[in-house]
Length: 171
Image (cartoon, rainbow, N blue to C red; front, side, top):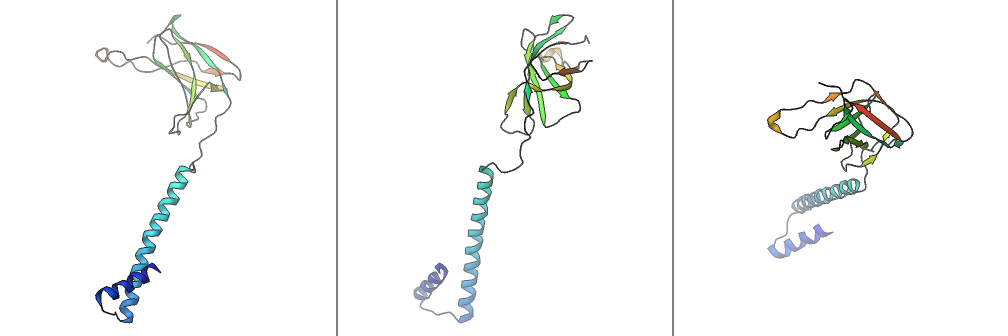
């Protein structure tokens, strides 16, 4: 073995022969170090292989998603900017259904896995009943914080293309 050859080189270099016990002890320690280093390297390689192969906690599958677009308004006038968050009833914390509200008050929902580190985002939302929270834009820190507003009525998304008009109550 490699350890045995190194031990023999030690004998030739020093000109001394170790006793049987000393030889045994040196070879044992050298083999233990060899196994420990190689074992650690094997563990690192296996760990990297598992990580790179995608093994690990499985991401939940997306339910069938349906297009959801619409407009956000207050007293019939479009609200410019902000964001929407739809929360399923009952809640499904593994998914976030969100949208930015454009300057003309329009939006288009997307669904994101809350556990996905890659940020995979798909257009649409699963069919079902939702509570909706509108968060106004905070454009100027000197004007203070505008708190989120929970819409009073639940929204139903159907298993088809959906066009919604969301009425945000006055504060």
